[in-house]
Image 1 (cartoon, each protein chain N blue to C red):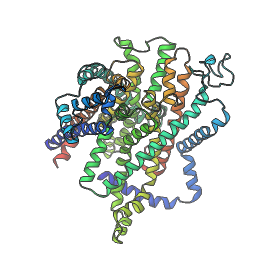
Image 2: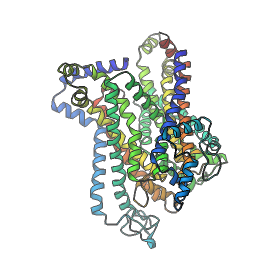
Image 3: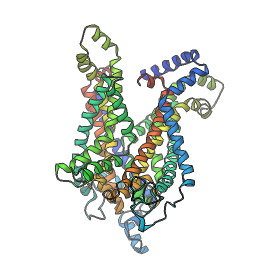
Image 4: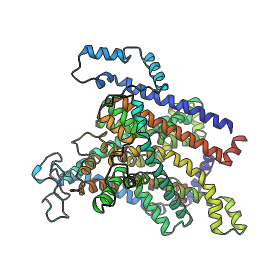
Length: 308
Length: 307
């Protein structure tokens, strides 16, 4: 058990290192960092001066070492547009995005696990058919399509909620619904499959032979046993969720890090793009590893298999 | 490992039961009963036919602007512009012909992206599945990392560095899609590595490259088709999403995602410019997902059991 946690913990710095390395080489291989940072009419002398200032005239390994030490100290350069440290600008937008993600994941898990469980219990019924229909369409609908459709119905036609912006609870409704819908169908599908699988285990037969009621059997035995793989699958949905915030925040003008990322690309603000991309990547990867670890600690089965 | 064993016994079991029901009418019946496969095949075929034949029927130039007749509704409105069944967009361009031409961009980007990620992912799966040890560890950790990261991050970086173009979009799709191929095909290769025909080929002195390409790869084909069909759907969603954000196919080229982005600006006065491309993307992705799901049920008896 300790060994499992230790390897997971060790994986965090290793992955962070891998991610920063990929970003560094992508940027330096492009070879046009300087022309991205300067206006097109800049003179050759200006270019060389900036190249020297950024250390781009140094050999690649030295540049790489500089970059890594900068990254460790949280220094990703200065945002060209905001004229502030890029990391600070990016970090300032994180709370808004977290708000969106937390509400969405809560909604998606509640509906997804609930509906998936119901579909498994009533396998073959109309509930199951409805769940199948929702998952088939849900997995085929683009997030931006869902978002715009919600805008059309609830903001343009019914006028229940505003089309975009942030600050009031009403403005939270559509972005959260859209983002939740991006992951809900998958969570529902996984829940249904896992529950049906768990229901076919031999212990279910034993429990039934003991005379356990169907309700007790499903809730006390099948649900609890099937829950763990569901949560690790939800951890994997985090990538979809973070990718979804970029689209959702753009549609609803939500001032989070996703909107900032698209804005930074449009402004050709390379240091900010790098900082935002690294921050999102690191956030997702670390959360995933932590979820894995938490599940391993909670689950009796991994505890036992790790020991043997 | 236990999963691999289970799969192996299942595959062996499937061989035996196949012999019993291998007559042609039986096979045809099973195939026709697979409604997902049939519906998916039909929808993909219909979509491709529209994509190729559509421009022969619709004579509007998808880029030709006609400002006086902009934002005109289509056939559902009596005040609609004549000759524009789906209406016109904010530059007076014909929405139907933009959708039809847009299919070419969205589809070809998605399909070429599938080829790229399929080649990378399969090659890595063959290597990591055949040689265990550090290559396997390295590749599988890379798969974990790739699957944990949102593809949009790579798109943001690439567009910030190189600008947006169709080829950059394909690079993003290829570099973010390989991991699902590697994950699935890796375990299959692991099983096949100890299959008798592979041992036989090795005993005859075949080099690993020959074993992998001539003996292992053909056995992976069913999985490869399933994955690729699902991957087209995934790529369509990703590519249109990136184009929606302005990170994909550059404007003014008609592309479904960027058409939606343009539609959003006039959502109050011309809602059809949002609904029609949105519906088109959904139906196209649904068609490929159904096809992939149907294929999977055909090759994997376990998926069928859980249906």
